[in-house]
Image: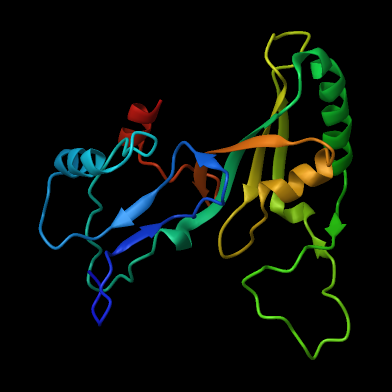
Length: 212
């Protein structure tokens, strides 16, 4: 636990999930007072957690050398992948697929993509500024948008896979991208994976085998 009048567990999430969004490979880092086997920690936590939130795998992080500064989990995050499924009827699957294809080609062909972003509700308003914030270039934050399950080759609804910048060096919400792709459609968004700044999975190989 942290020190002070209001101690709290030393638990940090790689990237907190937004409201109304689910994640399949969420990462957290926890510091314990006493050594516990990884499998025992997983069992103990899962007994206390609801069925919808379960620990899939635990592993022990090797201690850093004294002369090496410890890297926080959040500082290693650079990207995330998302699955976005349009909430439409199967009868219009072909039409929505065509619409998505054209929008993706248009967005990915642009070198810059400026948009006026809404002010963060947690941010303090700038009372001295007379002008609204400058538009933000979203294009460098969008690494890829891929359309899956085309109607002509699958009976499933088409869905989008988004690879977006996430973390302290650059961040864009999937909803902001979906508003550009298809603003008149509601999507169900699931975060699939959290990646490093180089695009590699942060989940260890041993844990990834369990997740797959």
